[in-house]
Image: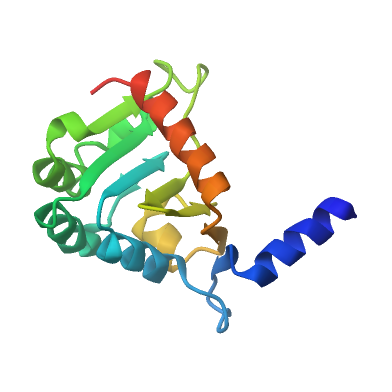
Length: 171
């Protein structure tokens, strides 16, 4: 009960905001809109971690504009699922925008081995942790729940996780 109350008070203080994508959801922030907003307002860095990244061509101009602003963009995908989908136009186009060296793959050689199934994006000092894979369907049509985080200690911990995964990943 103490943990739940602590989380509730954090949410009320504005450090954590619910992000809900569902066909019947009217009051929550939609995942696609939050992703677009975070990419669009980033000034220094974007770190993206996802199982896959496909059918998101609508976001490519935002990535391109962020790159033009000098934003450092790094993308980390699951080795098996991400590589299988890496021939998709989204990953190929994103690689040409951010540079192939900034798109990496983490995990084992098969789904039996280690897998990267976390889905989060860190834009400067804000993070989005979500159940949604970064696919067009997941961010627009699936029922997905996430959390927009502006608590610096939590964002720093996620940034450190991303850094450690990045260091042990391959292009």
